[in-house]
Length: 423
Image 1 (tube, one colour):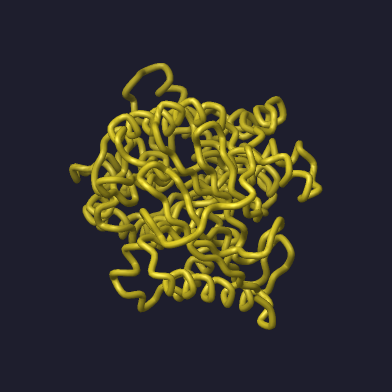
Image 2 (cartoon, rainbow, N blue to C red; image 1 turned 60 degrees about the vertical axis):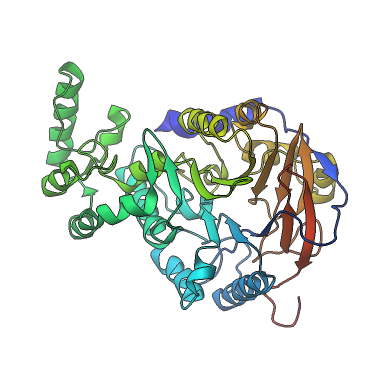
C-alpha cells in the first residue's frame, strides 16, 4: 500500500503543471443544446469543516440554496462533481439525504453525482500505511457512498467495468448481500488471525486457486493487522446473482467502486455524460488524500466506451483538476508545486485517450476555483465551491448549454454563501 500511495505523489512531483488556455468569457444567450447546472464541493459536515472551520448549519444552508437555485433554472441535468461531504462520514451523507428528501422523481433523475476525495479517500486519523484500520475506514466511506449515491442513480445509468450493465439493477439484485454485509461487516483481525492470515496468503502464493480466509492483500505488509472478512459473508458473496459483484475474491464495497467506473450517467442521441472516479488511492493523511488518479483500468475502459460513442458529444464529470491556466495560478498566489501534485496524476494519459474523440467537455471541481479553459480541443469547466465560494471570482453556481459539437455557452450564474447576510 505504501507504493500505491506514493506513486501518484511522486508522479505529481516529477510532472509539470499542465497549462490550460484560459477563456476570459463564454458566449451567453438562449440555451441551445443540453442544459447542465454544475455545482461542486458542498462539504456537508456534522460539526465544522476540516478546512476553514465552517459551521454545519451554514454549509447546509448554502447547499440547499444552491440546489434550489439550480432546479429553478429548469436544466436538463444538475451535476455535482464531488466533495459532497467533508469527510465521507455516514452522518454527513444523511445531511444530503435530508436535502434531497421529497425531491420529485423527475428532479431526482436529473441529479448526477461523482465522488470527490473528501467523500472516499481522505483521512484525518493517524494510521500507518500498513494498518488495516486504514482499509476499513476507506471501506466504510465506500459503503456510505453506495448507500446514498449509487443506490439512487438514474435507472438507465450503466457501469462499464469488466462487464457492462444497469447499476441500479445490479444493486437491486444484491440487496440481500447488502443486508448480510451490514450484519457481518469486515473487521480487524486478532493477533492469532494475523499469523493465520499471513500463512494463508503464503500458501495462496505457492498454490494458485487456494482461497485465503482473509481479505486478499496487495502485499504482505497489509497483514499488520489484517482485515478479516467473515466466512459467512464470503459465502454470501460467492452466491451466483448473475452480477460481476460481489464475489468471494471481491466482497468489499471498495471492490465495487473499482469495478463500475466509467459510468454512463445520461445518454441521448447527441450527448453522453460519463462519470469518473478519480479517488482510487486510499490516503494516509489529509495531504495525500487530495491526490487524484483514475488508474490504467478505468482509462482503458473509458477509451473503449468513447470509441463506441464516437458520434456524440462526451461530457466527462470528474472531481480532480486536469491542470491550471497560468492566469488563475497567478491570481491564487499558491505554489505551482501544490497545484501540480494535486492535479489528476494521470492527466497526460487521459489527454491521450480524449484526443481521438471529436467533442469533449470536462466538468470538475476540487480546488474551489471557477474558470473556463481549453486543453487541446477539450473544453474544461472548473467549478468553485458551494461551501467555500470562488477563489478567483464571484459566482459559484452555474448553468451551461452544451451543444452537440461541444461548444459551451453560459446560461445563468449566481452566488450563494455560507453567511446568511451575503450572496
